[in-house]
Image (cartoon, rainbow, N blue to C red; front, side, top):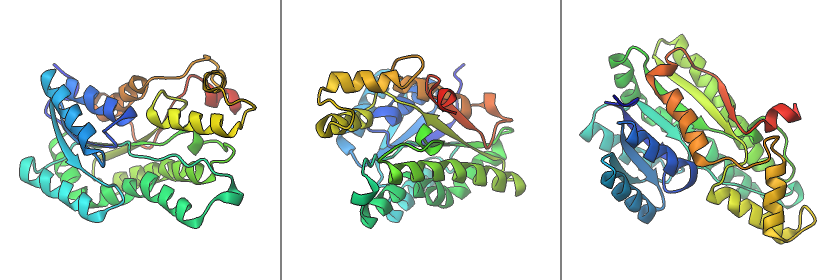
Amino acid sequence: MHRLDGKIALVTGAARGIGECVASTFAAEGAVVIATDVLEENLSELSTRVAEQGGHCMAKKLDVTCKEDWIAVRDLIDAEFSKLDIIVNCAGMEMVRELKDLTLDEYRLTQAVNTEPAIFGTQILLDQLSKAAEECKNGASIVNISSIAGLLGIPDQIAYNTSKGAVRHVSKSLAIEFAHHKRNIRVNSIHPGCINTPMLREAMEAWAETGKIGTNDIAKVEEAFAAVCPMNKIGEPSDIALGALYLASEESGFVTGIELVIDGGSYASWT
């Protein structure tokens, strides 16, 4: 018996990093996964890999800033399944920029990619989520990937920090709204610390290039990132995927509106 048998799960940002790991993990646990991203070639490789392992994964292009793409995903779900049990919003972008250099367009793009899907993607798919919620005692589940940057102030990341802080509050707001209206849809956020993903690698390379911490040596930058964590290491995508698995499964039927921090103790050491 798998933990997600019979579930239909949509994962955004599934082409790499945390999203890819979430999609693979959910498929291994019995879910039919709709893996979405703008990186279609990566999605195709993911679907093939999941199929070889005996899982079910459908690849679908989705630009999370595009309403028409969300509607196409909704139409696919209607045609194939009619319901949607789980959404995991993993799609995201980093923005390392000092306030003096940040443009309005950059700020708005960061919000559009990181925050708006948790609102408007949910809105577009609400009927499919509600259908699943009617059929399952513990309801449908939405898991939004935020960040410890949504809980703390981190320098030179005002656009990213505020977008992830908004994801946290969107999750709480929708959790209470859905409970109030008896929709039986649970909503929670996960707040990763430093996780070994392409996005983190790109951020470390940017810090190395600019010498933000006094060195251009990428290995020393990586050591510095790990040292921020009391456990003195960088986490893996599987650490986040397993947290998402719990929140998506029947095991968390009485859990909504929480922020699950998975960061090796970083947040605890800073607050």
